[in-house]
Image (cartoon, rainbow, N blue to C red):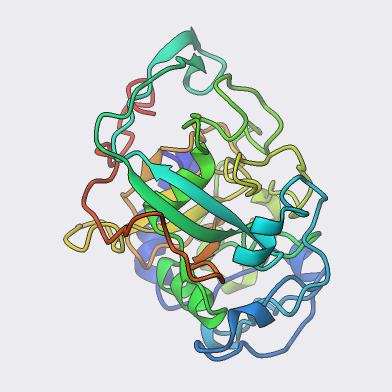
Length: 338
């Protein structure tokens, strides 16, 4: 599973006990932040939202957590920063995804390796999409929430909170299919960087630290435990961890909530996690964890947002909610799933 052994430890207890608690920012992250501004209403213009240098304290409720303030820089000067099509379609803190999502794409391991990627050191090239692709055109946050260069990604947020924060910024929590397409790119890569597993350019394959569930449950010890477990890097720390569409850290750093309900209204698993985190987990673009409900939160679970393009063109063809999404819902055996 994308969340690895750390999520499994104490997960059931945390879901039951922590469902109503506010999101947490690790102590070292809060030391870098200090904004107490309020979040704009859900109908606030999205163009007025972007990176800034502040974030709320851990004691804030979901309603009090601010959306990003107006930005002044799109981040690293990659080739997307000066693209006029990008500038017309998305605000600078987002990047344009314009391509075709493959609902069913098999992964085949070309080179096994016990020390890499849970049994696969390299995936085979040339795999064909097994179902007709869906055209998509949308904007996605360049970085994980709060999408502000130099800050740490927000974690310990449940699926409901992630959706509310995106709505407050005039965006939406990324559909599962949107997230996968943004990560795979037009060549449908298993990793944003290609086919070969490596500990870089993204924040992956750091040593796993067993979580103390009881310490996370107690108010008096939670911050200390989160700091002990913390191995995520500041947003923008990995300039080469970029997908073909211009989104950073889609593989590794933190797990990211996605909205499976928007793709499949009949699903029994509305809340999905994609991308994996910093630990030694699979981290492929198509890997999806469905075993955690919408009230689940944990020390490495974050999110990012998506939105319709500013130019009003959503796709070359309409892309309504579909049930044609990747069939493999859960990685029970890491050797047999992407």
